Structure formats: structure tokens, C-alpha cells
Image (cartoon, rainbow, N blue to C red; front, side, top):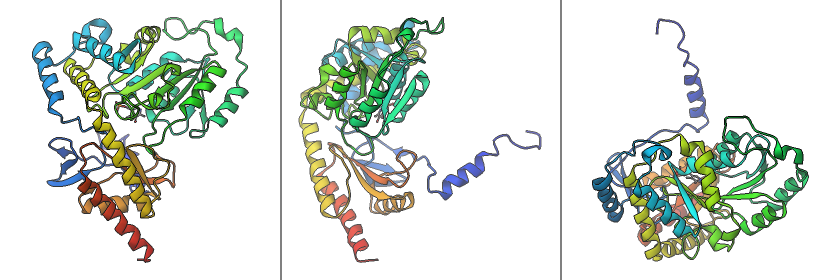
Length: 415
Ligand SMILES: *Cc1c(COP(=O)(O)O)cnc(C)c1O
């Protein structure tokens, strides 16, 4: 650069503003494996921050499966799945996911993020409408935006408000159904399609979507229903298939999105559903078509993780029992754990600065609990987010409860 202004100069005041508002994010790097204890900067912390709910991320059986696949197939996939990137390991995993989910078929994406964006943008287009919960994950929000469909946001879990929106928009212009979308792009032709989309287990507050009500609305108002089970796959439901299984509505969900990267301890995302749904996504989901397939060894590890989820249900049972006990103990201490019904337990604090202070206080005591701030949550709703793992011991949870109990006691004494 020759003297003049650097076109990136605007970044410094923006970062300074984030600093001043206690909203600036910074990276850290762990040392060693992810587990119930993590090492950061040479110090050990009890890890209440990961999504490794079943403690599988460092399970040797996943590594063994990956090593066997590397020996057979090498590391890189080398091409997008539709060219030559899809290997026997990917095919096995997709069959394995469909079997686990009880669906006709499944399709593996590079991530859960890619699965949501890819599926939503392939299902609705410019002349269609999406109805989306206000607390849906960023990947759903981005999928809605990319689709260019009209997006209707409904208040969190408020199916009555959703029904009003559906009613108000109930008159679809039938003439749109036959008109062509732009040539040369594989998008749904015509228009007037409607899609209801929701997280099944909300990632910040740990509560469930009212899936039976949403399924009823989808049926009444002729909508597709997509649910994102990212935090629920492997954890919730009698067989660990998710909230739809728990709430008994699996056969009323048209599109199931899940991730391999949370409870399954691997990496990648998937869509599960009918054969024709998957056939359509193979032809229309740009995030699937124009992106290199993941390493086959990753697919082999994910298939091994599904075997463990099926063979070892005690992992999820113990996890959810621990969450129940943690919630009641925190409430006894006077903390607000909001609507949590799962292994994700928020502790509501209020403003960002207070949340950061509390997180720093816990960190000093060797407890790693992330503060969740805007824009991840609405302003004024900053919280600490405790996520439990099968790997946590009673003693670890006890330490967390005692530390938080002490903070409340100090608050109450006016200090
Ligand atoms: C984490 C998450 C995703 C993204 O999954 P990745 O595999 O991490 O990309 C999608 N949806 C929800 C609700 C999530 O919490």
C-alpha cells in the first residue's frame, strides 16, 4: 500500500465499538483432546461449553473406524459427491443414517449449517414463503435468506401466532403455481409452496419446539415441515432420534435435518426423509452439488458413532438425569434456568457485562462456561450456557453448583 488510506481502516473503530459494548469475540485454542476437562493456556478446566453430549468426540472407537477407512480409502474425497467424491464410506453412512432415523433415505452435507442452507434453498424459491421461529439457528436464517422466499418470523414456539400468519397468507395465488422460475437454475418451478421451519431443541435455551402443533398446522395449511434436530440427535427420544421421536410425530415431519458434529462427536450434517426428497436435494441443493465431499474417514467415524448411540442408550439417559438434577439445584440457589428441558441449561444473567463477569469468575475457579451474548441472543437476555456431557462426573457438577450458589449468596448479602 502506498501511503494513502487503507480501505480496511473502518475495521478498527468497529472492533473498538464491540470492545466497548462487551461484544467482541476472541479465539482460543485448546491443547489436547476435547473431553469433560480441557486444557487452555496450560491450565485445566471443567468443560461445560462443548456439544459433545455423549462424550464421543475422543472415543477411541471413532478414531479406529477412521483409521481403517484411511487405510482403505486414503484421506481426501477429491471431488464433489456428484462427480467422483462420494465413496463407499459415504454411501454406507447415508444408509446407516436412514436406518437410524427410520426414513427411506438420507444425504450427508459438509456440515449441519450446509444441510440447512442447502435444503431450505432447494425447497423454496422466490415465489414461496417460509415461516420461521424467531430463535432458529443462524443456518436456518441464512437458508431462508438465500432462498429468496418471503420470510415470516413467528414469536418463539408460538404456534397460535404462526397459525394467524398462515391464515393471513392462506390465499396463495394459484396462477403462480405453473409459471417458470428463471431458466437454467434448478429451483422449484412455479410458486406458492410454503415451508415451516424450526429447531427442534433450541440451542441457547435448551427447550423443545411444539412439534405436534406445528405438524397439525403443516397439515391444515398445506405446508412442508422442516425440523432441525442438531442438538437432539443421539440425545432425545427413546432411541435417541430426536424431539420428533419423543413427541411421537416422526411420520409427520417432511424434512429432518441433523448434524454429525454434536452428540455424535464427528463432523458433517445430514438431511433424512423420503426417497424423492433426497433425489430432489441431489439435483437442487447447491451446497451439496458444488462442494467437495468430506473425507471418507469422517463418514466411517460417524457410522461408528451411530452404532454406539444405538448400543449404549445409558449415555443419553445419564446425561438427561444429570441435567434434571442440575436444573433443580440451580433453581434452589435462585438462578433462572428458563425453559430448559434438555442437556442445555441456560443461566439467565441479563446484560452482557454481567454475563462476562460471571463467566470470568467461574473460569478463575477452573470452570469453563461460555457467556452467550447478543447477537446470539436478544439484547438484555445474556446468559451463561451450561452444556452437559455424559463424561461429566458428579463431583464436577457439584463444583459448578457450589460456585454458582456462592455468587447468589454474595448477591443476596448485598456485596
Ligand atoms: C450447530 C447447529 C447447526 C450447525 O451444525 P454444524 O454441523 O455445526 O454446522 C445447525 N442447526 C442448529 C440448531 C445448530 O445448533
